[in-house]
Image (cartoon, rainbow, N blue to C red; front, side, top):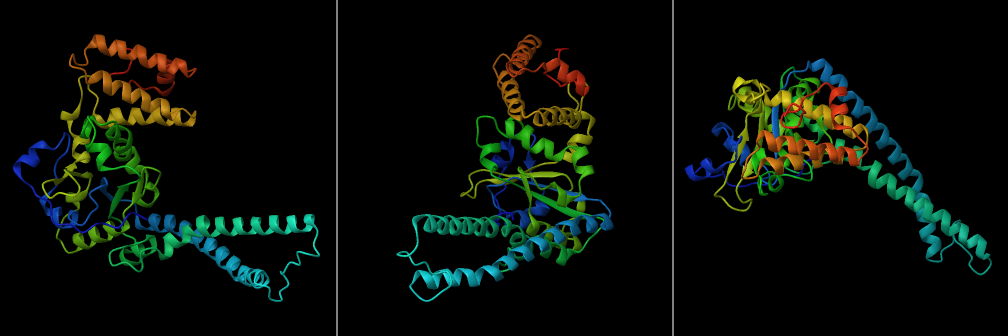
Length: 364
């Protein structure tokens, strides 16, 4: 479940703050101000409209419902059979008559050792079962029911049902505003922008996955936010176009009111011909190729190499001299060496994938 949204006053939209938002972020749509004021400013959010058919979404959702129901049943059965056992052990520990009481004086050291090992193993098994396996059905069916504004997957679907068009809202996991806006390189220049946001918004990914399948190690679903957005759309307080294709973050100090929510309209950016670089490649096309390279390296257990390559290109491109053709050629040689140190041939991998990455290919 995503963290509970913090209730805060609506953000300031002073002119000075608006002009300082790092590209490609600009001020978030004013129509979303009431909604954004309740979000956690430490996180980054992505919103879009899921257009998969309702019947498909229903089939997808049945799978976790069945799995979590099975897990819940297993945990409940274990608790049912474990309670008498634990009660018997507890009674024996306090000296009461019990089938699990241990006569230390009459038992050999070997017998005592096996009793201790068996009980420790049982305790560990039950701990893992309850703590980890039990947390899945808990977060799926129960989590958030006692909170005013919390939702879980079941309450989300119970309240909204399945629709052909519905809002999807993702929230960053274990990273957020500080990583995107707090470093030396901010916004679009941050390595987190290309390695975490861009892969999550490129067209192939968004069009190939319904919202519930977009949860992963970088992003979770904000179920409460999706319920609120759908209610606002139904009430005509906002339109689908207002949230279709936004990456949102808080620009400013989290505990101050002199910042604002900013947005990158990635749908518009990727569809615009003005987004093409000097090689005629759109941002979306470039990111699609970057994603293919990252996936290939991840499959080889070398995903860290991808991030080191990105950091190197970001560093070389930020020097006062600029990213001249000569510097691009030098950067390319450094990238080749990074790959060679890992026993890989950079150009061969690009050729196998059929990609030509801007600023990193041999043509530069």
